[in-house]
Image 1 (tube, helix red, strand yellow):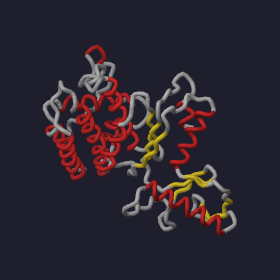
Image 2 (cartoon, helix red, strand yellow; image 1 turned 30 degrees about the horizontal axis):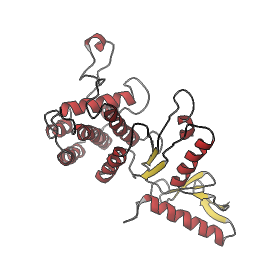
Image 3 (cartoon, one colour; image 1 turned 30 degrees about the vertical axis):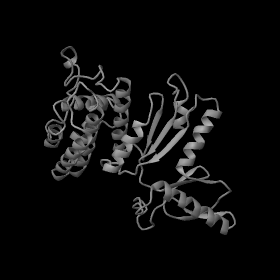
Length: 311
């Protein structure tokens, strides 16, 4: 449905390539088009921890093979469980079990065959398992930046998780900043909003809530270089564009101020990652004085630890 929506109407995407990034933790396979996740019967509402030394993609391929093997032994049937945990025999035809990567690839091809603009340069699927309400792991954040660095202006990027997960807003902000800088030639875009609303609109616009009252935010900025404020401007402007302060959707800064305790600490850590990535993306600009990636990420680690230590 997502790919179909991207190819229809006035906003149809004329994409060169498609990058689909799954941020969920669950191992999922599709049995005749319906998603099934691997869970423990003792904790059916909690994703299982990822196996050591294995990627989520590898584990999903293994799960597919195990289901197909069981179906072969049981004359085309396998045991699945309902959302309430009840075991149910299900018929499995040949080719009826697919991994998420296979589903995305097949659907992208189907959209193109159906007359959509298509994805002329193919489709890439990646898994970066993440807890919805927490910051990305350092490895996942690095991988995301690598994936986005390989994109062109014509490429489309889709992120998936469960529901309106906060981590989706984080990933979307990172991807949007990368695209905006590609279009601006690596410089701070000219349309970035200033620190607060312009005087002519200030009385009609709500305060932006820039989180400057949090010590962890200042700690991060102190280690990002002389023009760290410019990186924060880019991050804040992108967040506002993705979810306007008076609009619907998850607004990263507004969510921080509305939360408390450990939830606030994790949401603040997500915001810190967006600001840090803005600094990393702008570091190549010859007109700005910003620290390098290693130094910024070192500061991010310290700021995130400070945020989590003081919920």
